[in-house]
Length: 190
Ligand code: AMP
Image 1 (cartoon, rainbow, N blue to C red):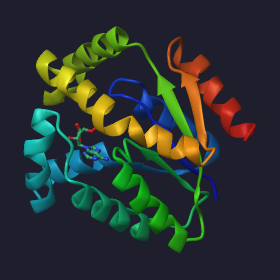
Image 2 (spheres, helix red, strand yellow; image 1 turned 180 degrees about the vertical axis):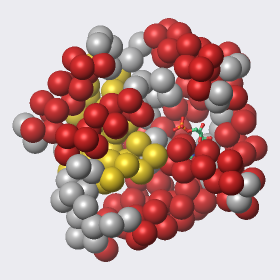
Image 3 (tube, rainbow, N blue to C red; image 1 turned 90 degrees about the vertical axis):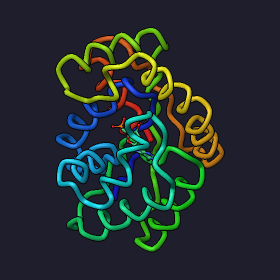
């Protein structure tokens, strides 16, 4: 099994690159942002709970996120592995993920960290907000909050994987194809 964490700030291209990686490596996509948006559109209790946090650009509490990921892993077909996109976003989430995967005897193999300068992130998110319909992409203040939350709460997760020798920093600027090639190189040379 090949379990990958695709990591990076909002607007780094995680969703776009996930799709390409899934096709090539036949992985199951677990995007916590997508899962929350699905719950929201279905009006589920979980969606209602998450909405306030998402609207403000804050993180949904760890127990809620990890419970949702656990459900998704156990309801997924056995596969070549998972690609985690937008998860884990805190160190407790990373520890919870390691525990979940330990039960499956299939640890995280690599953490690919997309690095993109801050102004480029803001420009990309504003552009995405024009077509995505995502409320959290349409307001500069919320975009700035999400980038700040990433720096303060999520960046420590990179150290967690660095200490395990799994962190691969990837330059996240340039064409979609050139970034994809860098990601493949990192995975194929593991
Ligand atoms: P994303 O689509 O990954 O940018 O996520 C959109 C929003 O969903 C985030 O701003 C958070 O409010 C929430 N969210 C997604 N993933 C997580 C996570 N792993 N932990 C906490 N909140 C999350």
